[in-house]
Length: 438
Image (tube, rainbow, N blue to C red; front, side, top):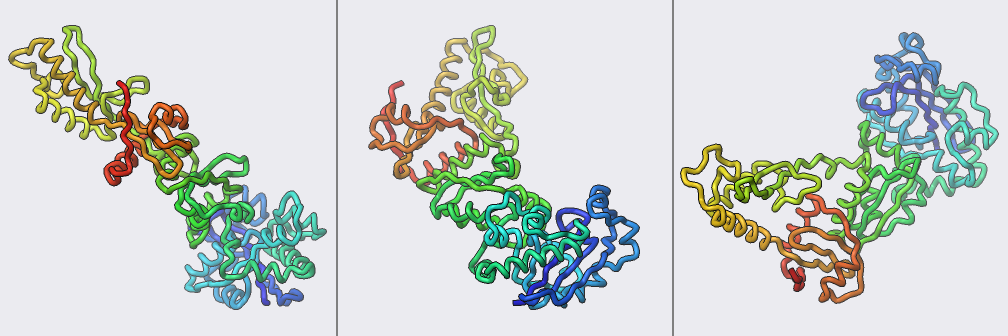
């Protein structure tokens, strides 16, 4: 098997907006090193000071170097028909492929990551970064953080792997159905192996064990793997993948339950990489209060934290539309609902008008049904239109108060309300309507 061990230095961490400043390729025939290519590259953009300090590669050093486009034909030729090897291969491969593509060359090579390879062949080390691993294996790196020195050290790691019966491991990692090389650099395959192929919610954790992403799935394992496949080299995705150190999960009986629980967990944990369901929900409500003259007034206002509206809306226009409907249906005064600035020509008696308001509120409250959704062992309780909670209980569903007392209570949010409403409309035959004392 032929290998091309690659190391690059760059101006930043993602290829779309950053350039390569140096590249080294060590050719290995499976027994020994048979050649080496190394060059500085002019990235045609400034090198950040902290990278200059780390690599020693300055803007002056690359000013007279060839552009990547100039060396691309030679690089492409060297990589052809070889296994692309690198320490944290997805980083180097994404940069080289992107810049080769920009120069008119389409690189398609099998990839081999010496971080993952070393974890299998040399288990038990605390860290597997190039510097730490080289010290553990007795490899001396000349010119650390320079492409040539790091590539030669990686080649020595590959040598030691091959000498320690690593060929079988390499072949397993290169199999087309082996997805391990797609995994984020800091994620052990252990976390993939323990994932079930059932519905549920999964959590991506960072180095500090903090949850940075929550997702739901019909098949947890399949959905998690889909995050890591494909060739998206954008900054957001690369930043996302680098943050994943561990995965945990909670199994659910159905995908619908997983959808509800995902929404609950996103609101509870507020993960850094979740975008949907985190937008600020500016909610509006219709409230009732009594003025100094004794009239019961209906008014639209922003939803208050400690005051429960008669009904809530995500958009102000929907609240206005609904209140106007009440005005017409129950003969309410638009001015007393703050919908019209002009006072009525004749004020209705307070007691008569208040009965109309009470009738409107009773009608709306009556529309808010109470029901239980039973999804296998999971019982989901909705009381008078409000989500109360859910939980797995061994019960036939007839005793509402017992069920309500034995489920887990969760806070409601607008996403949950929408999902439950749609479910109720789509599957009315799957709702259980208990007798509730008022």
